[in-house]
Length: 72
Image 1 (cartoon, rainbow, N blue to C red):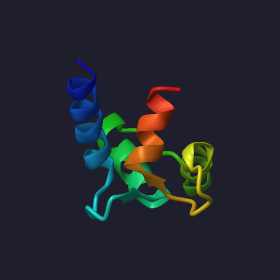
Image 2: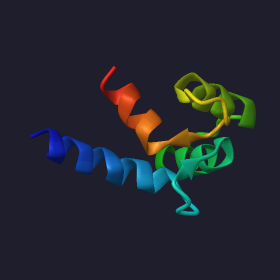
Image 3: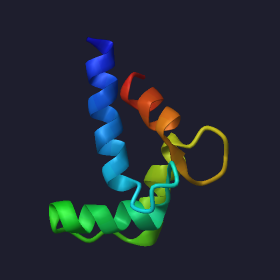
Image 4: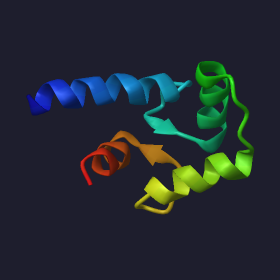
């Protein structure tokens, strides 16, 4: 069951990882929110969300950080 959840989470993460480098930046997050939800958020709002999940201080979100937040 956990593998199914992780696979689903990875698909969601990959949707936000626009350039496929394994990291989600604030700009990528902002663009996907606009596309999927039709709502605009500012770069600073997007960065604030990324920073809240970022555990290593690189101001980007890795899958591991995303997964940890989902299971926290």
